[in-house]
Image (cartoon, rainbow, N blue to C red; front, side, top):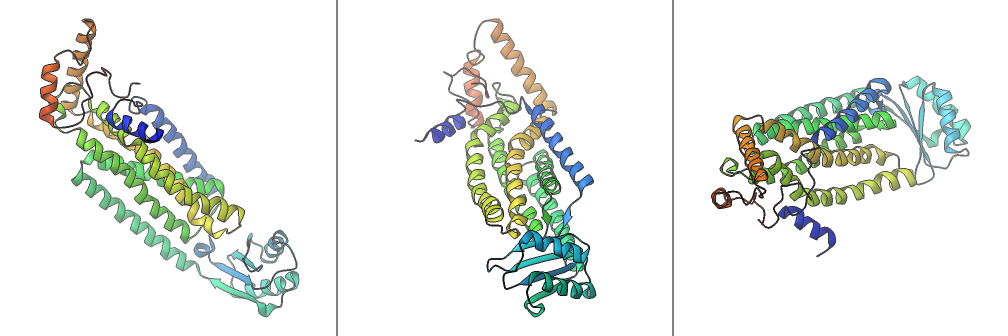
Amino acid sequence: MSRLGNLGARLYRGEVGYDFIRNRKIWYGISILITITAIIGVAVGGLRMGIEFKGGAVFTTDTKAQISTSQATDVATEASGHLAIVQELGNGGLRIQITEVDTAKANEIKETLSDELGIPANDINADLVGPSWGEQIANKAWTGLGVFMILVVIYLAIAFEWRMAVAALIALIHDITITVGVYALVGFEVTPGTVIGLLTILGYSLYDTVVVFDSLKEGQKDITKQTRFTYSEIANRSINSTLVRSINTTVVALLPVAGLLFIGGGVLGAGMLNDISLSLFVGLAAGAYSSIFIATPLVADLKEREPQMKALKKRILAKRAAAAAKGESPDDDGSEDLRDDTETAGTTIGRPRSHGRTPGKR
């Protein structure tokens, strides 16, 4: 077995682990800081909306221009009075995108580009894009997002419980906010591809969260019939038992997206790939983070406010204090009753008695 596989097996059995729940205030603080930064970025810098949302003109050439891409950008910007985006196509031609341009202005810009690029005007294709199409896409995306959120909350409330539904919803909002904030801070253009990417990451984020929730649901069966682990400790075991799986699936998903973003968009200059790949890259990373550091700790916080969980925690802490006063291990104190409790529960929340450790402790 590989070293990573061996670590995953030990995490699953509870032999090793990291106490994510105990340090939840740190994770909350980090998330709040990142979220505030993202919101400030959107509020101050705003989103750089693409031509599909603002409307404008797109000029494409099939032959190579006599000037460089940067020079073409300056020419198009000066001719239109708006910032132009110029991309080099695979055949050596150019794609020049200018927002907020009407038909009359487009014809003037076309003639100017023909003179400066050294390309006949008939060889330059000019397409006008109206903002209404982008608005329709945005409205449908918001509608789809709202329906998705409602269905997710209903499903998780039925399949698990309402606390998990609330935690998952907060995690999803967290992921979307961070992704949108990164777009504002980086200055990437928001296009229909961006919208598709945002909607896609919701599924990935929810998948990681549900995997941990499913393990937590299994581990909390008949939790009040045992006196070894609090709810937070069981939640921590659930995170650790699925940690390697979450890391593996996230890395495997991030690798091809990183190829699109850094190689396709950065090295090869295929700028259109950036629209969807950046939202996927940031969203996948944020989704993996939120499922481990946000969603499950939130469930533990909400659950331990219940009277039953408070009483359970009080009994466990009292038992551990009494065992410590006698110089005994908590697992040895009343071990016969404990074994009966865990067998009645029919779960794997227990640990081999030889370890004599609490969850999350190395």
